[in-house]
Image 1 (cartoon, rainbow, N blue to C red):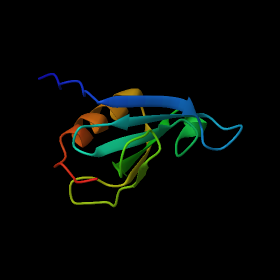
Image 2 (cartoon, rainbow, N blue to C red):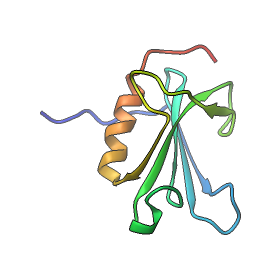
Image 3 (tube, one colour):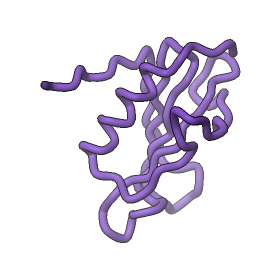
Image 4 (cartoon, rainbow, N blue to C red):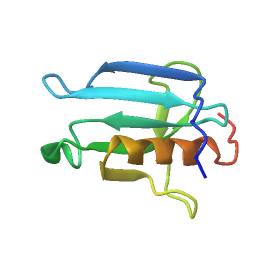
Length: 100
């Protein structure tokens, strides 16, 4: 069975928030959750990615905070391949909707 591709309502791409570091991509979903994906975090030395679950507080690419872990999802995942990222984004897109 093939997993459905995620459909974020907005995706932003920018250089890392830390000068001289890697890239940072932010995904936002209609349920109020999203993901911050970086290539200079846990796993970077192996060419892998780090994903953090975020909760948006309003409009804008950077108007979010790190979401707390829940039984449904841990807050930060490291050492991820692109395929792993896709799976986690699908899972985030299906989380119960939150208020901003």
